[in-house]
Length: 103
Image 1 (cartoon, rainbow, N blue to C red):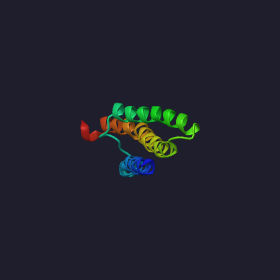
Image 2: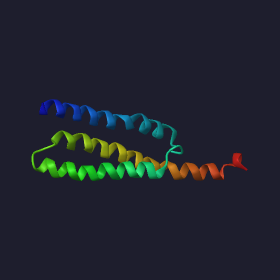
Image 3: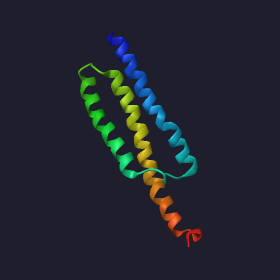
């Protein structure tokens, strides 16, 4: 039963992490994060980062190794979204405000 639960966690973690990839690709291509709220992205990243501390603690005890692996992937992907927002979110909004089309 424990192996089955570990497999569920592995697939669940991979599914969550993979869910970020299309948005990351879109943000890189369009150089825009205008449809995203900073608080949303920051909250998700913060929550996953706190869970990462939990995962590291249990991994050092020899438990929850798969959780550590998938959670680490989620930290990287959600962190990528945060970085992209910081790069493109504010810059895009500033460009839109300065654009002659908005006058």
